[in-house]
Image (cartoon, rainbow, N blue to C red; front, side):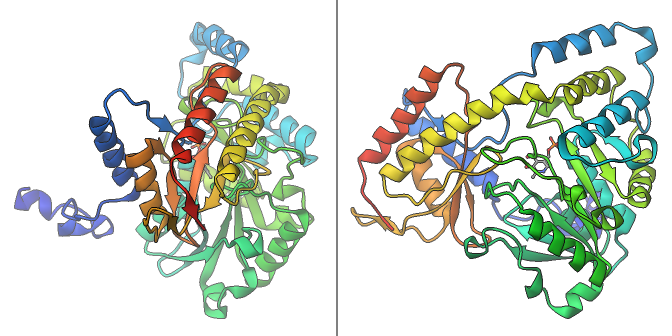
Length: 409
Ligand SMILES: Cc1ncc(COP(=O)(O)O)c(C=O)c1O
C-alpha cells in the first residue's frame, strides 16, 4: 500500500490500519473450513445449513410482471423516491394484513431492500455521541452506520430465559438518556421468536419515557408458523414513536431483486426519504411494479411457509434425536439451538464457533455460530432441495453423520 493511499482512508474505517487487521471474522472462518473440508473429503457432499437466502425463485406471475413492465419505454427512468403505485400497494397491504391504516403518500417510502434502509436510517437520527440500542445476536447494519457517524452502540442480549426479548429495564439510565433509537427485529433472526403484543406495548412506553425512536425490522414478518404475525405499528402509540421496515426478499423469494418499504411515523419517514434521496435514485420501476403485485397477492407466501415449516420440523426431529434441545421456531426460517459441551470421545466445545468448525470439518455440515449471548448454532431451512424426497434425503444424511458421535450436553 502506498503512503498516499494509506493516508487517504477515513478513521471510521481504521485510517492507516485499514486492510492490516489480521482478525479472521466468523463468515471467513466458515468459508475456509468449508474449503478445507471439501479438499480433505473429495466426493463427500457438503450439507449447507448456513445460507440465509431462499432456495426458490420468485413466483412465475411476479417474473411475468417484471418482464412485461421492462418492455415499456415509460418505465426506463430513475424512480427517485418511488412510484405511487408501489406506495398504494404497500398501504393497502399494511391495512389488509396487519390492520394498520396509514396514508400512502406521506407514510410510505420504498427502499432498495431493507439492508440499505437500515444503513441509511441512522443518518437521519444520530449525532456524534448518541447511542443506538441494538439487540444481539442480530443483524448489525444500523449499529455499523451509527459508529461511522460518531455514535455508540449499546448491545442488549437476547437471552433464552427472557424468551429472546430484550430486557428494556436492564438498560442503564445514562444509556437511556443518550439513546436515539431502539432496533428490534421480530420474527427474529437468528432466534426465530415472535414478539407478543404486550412486549410491543412495553416498547412504546419505553420509547415515550426515554425519547427514543423505534426501528422495527420486519424482514421475516410473513414467515410465521401457527401464529399470525403482528406489526409493531398496530400497537397503540407506536405510530408516534416508530417506523417499520418491510422487505420482499424472504417472503416472496426475492433477495436479489432488492425491494422493500419503510412506513410509519410521517416525520421519520420524511427524514428517511430525505437521506435516501441523496443516496440513490430509486429501484427500477418494473421491479416496484412486480413487488406491488406481490403485496396485492400475499397468498403467494403460503407454499413457501409450508415448505419451511416442513423442513424446520424435519431438522428439529433429527437434532432432538441426537440430544439437542431444539424448539421449532414460531417465525423466520432458522433453527437456533445451544451447542453440546463435548462428545463422549473426548472433544470439548467452548463456543458456537468451535462447534460449527467441528461440524464442517468432521461431518461436512455447514451452519452459522452465534456467541453473543450464550453459545448457539443456527441452521437455516433454506437449503437447496426441489422436492420433499430431496429434503428427506438431506435430513437423513445429517442424521447418519451425527450418529457416529455421542454428544454430551
Ligand atoms: C434481520 C434481517 N433484516 C434485514 C435483512 C436484509 O434483507 P434485505 O436487504 O434483503 O431486505 C436481513 C437479511 O438477511 C435480515 O436477516
